[in-house]
Structure formats: C-alpha cells, structure tokens
Length: 441
Image (cartoon, rainbow, N blue to C red; front, side, top):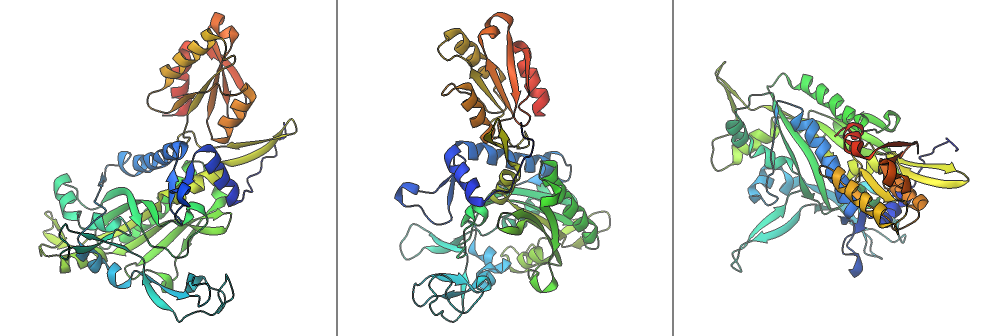
C-alpha cells in the first residue's frame, strides 16, 4: 500500500461526491433547480445532524452557563428596524446593461461586466432580506421578513430566558436555526447560499469583563474545529480591521479555513457591546427594557454580548473537505473520508460475505439490529465485498463488519477499520460493546 495520502481536492470533486453518494442535491433539480439553494440527502442530513449535535454538546451540555432557545423565523418587523437590518442590511449592486446580470460592487475587479464585458449601471443599494406578508385579509396584510440571522431572536428573548432560567451574567443563550439572505453573488457550492443554517451563541457579560470573555471565546471556538479533526494548518484566525467592523462591533475575529478557493470565513466571533439590547430597549413597545438587575450590588445595566456565530453548512463543508483522502492501493485509487467518528453519517456497515447463504444473511441482519439504536448502522449486500468496502470508505463509515461462513460456527466476525483498513476478528456477542467503546458515543 502507498501511504502517500493527498487531500488537494477541487470543490467540484466534493460536489460530485455529495451528489453521487447522497449527501447534497440541488434543490428542485427536476425543474431545473433554484440558484444557491440545496437539499440534504440521506447521508447529508445524518452528517448535518452530527455537526449540530457536536456544537450543541460543546456549547450547552458541557457547560453550566448556557441555555438553549428556538426562536421563530417570522418576527415583528419592528425587530429588524431596531437592529438596523431594514435600513442598512444591503449591498451596493450594479447591473450589466447588456446581459442584465447583477453583481456586488465589492466583487468586481474592473468597470466591465465579468460575464460579457458589457457596460455597468451606477451602483445602487439592494436589501438582502426576503420579504413576505402576514395576514388573511387582502389589503390588510403586514410586511414581514424571513430572518437574515438568528441572533435577534435571542436578544428579544433575553429577559424571558434570564428570568425563567434564573441565570446571572456571565451566561449565554444558544440557538441553531435557518436564516435567509437574498444573496446576489453566490456560488462555491454550499459555501454561500440563500437559505442556510446558523449555530449562534450570544454570551452576556458585565461591561468591563467583555475583553476577557472575548479572548476566551475566540480560542474556544477555534479549538472546536481541531477537536473534531480539522488540521491546524488549514485554520487561522483573522481579526477585522477597524474599517471593516460592523457598526455594532467593538472587535471581531473570523475563523478562516483554507478552502479550495482560498482562505474564507467559516465562523465569526464578535464583541457586539450592548448595542442590540440597548436598541431593543429604546424601541420596543413594552418599554420595560432589557437590562439586568444585579441584586447583590443593586446595579442595573445592559450586558455586553460576545457572539460566536458559525454557519452549519460551512462547517459541514469544512469537515468534508478536510476529511477527503486519496491513496493508491494495489495500483488502484482509493477515496475515503477520514471523518471524526462523531461526525460520520453512518457509524458501521454490516456486510454478508455470501448474500445467497440465508444463515449468513440472517446473522448479519441480527447484528445490524443489535448494534443500532443511538446511531445509524446499515446492512448492504448489493455488491462484492471489495466494492462494498470502497463504498463505505467514500462516505466515511468508520467500521465495516463482515459475516462469513466461519462466523456461523465460531461466532466471530471481521471488523475492518476505515483509515488503516486493518481487520480483526472479534466475538459477535461483544460487537455492541466494541462499537460503543471505539466510537466514543
């Protein structure tokens, strides 16, 4: 075996693998699709769940100072006025006078259309929020928006969560949910989509303690990716210059990954100060404000907010790309995903060596049922054993369990490990414990 493994992969190779193996499909593909909107297939939905589960475990279950929330996508439109999205959540755009295509001005390198070299219009502002209406009576409908971020749902629920959970700063509210942006410049597969999912934490701290917690969360979030197998050399932290900071931010770092198209953001960590809570306190109808009252000091204040905000889809793409491996085995190319076992969509595959032997098939099905439960296990007999191994390698399955003729007499099965391809015989009755121990779940 040639141990010279390579991971120099083009994005189109990842996209092809995702389509072929059932990770990701173009949305409404049979009708020609819709630009930059994607569907997660049988394997994609499993792996995406694993990514979200690991984030939730790290951010909520492993801590004592974070509560969860699932806020609605549709909100009172005044929320977006207070947050500044109605007035300023826009890109400067230009249109081509010839082919009519639209481009973000900050993505253009010249004064001509990059598609047809036609002339361009003067720049104009284009709001990125999707607008819809709420109301059953024609003429009385209210304009509302599909949320462009999940953060505001947390801010407007600050008092509700703090009061019901009896938390004191420093504490956080975590949320995973869909967001929508009418992006004009899209592409690079699922890197930039119009419908996407976010994993966001708003961590509320006393003013004056924000710098300490900001540094903590920058390091904590970088460590999450490496703890799940992403190689350190493919990650970096980049601090925003003052001129690129958002209007609400005191500081901001991006966790960047070396994608095939270059270094790009996968997560942002921002010190949002007390901007959001103050704005909502000023403008909300209740007038109650979103201040925290410290009973020990009798002090009332708007907490500062440290926000680690990650894209589920981008994190998904990072884990796929970083796990992609190729090597030559007996003069044949082997492709496999060296995913952390916690992220693998299928944890084990049970394979009968002879699918025409009913006793072997029966034993394989019983083993599959026995070790299933808290994770996905599959049975497959649709090809020769070599092809079955390669199929599971390519989708990142950590273990293949083979039932053969000898298994019927000695009760032993062969377990093959994905990355090394090493095999060992173990007692079938101990397989469940073996999987539990080696998967770390």
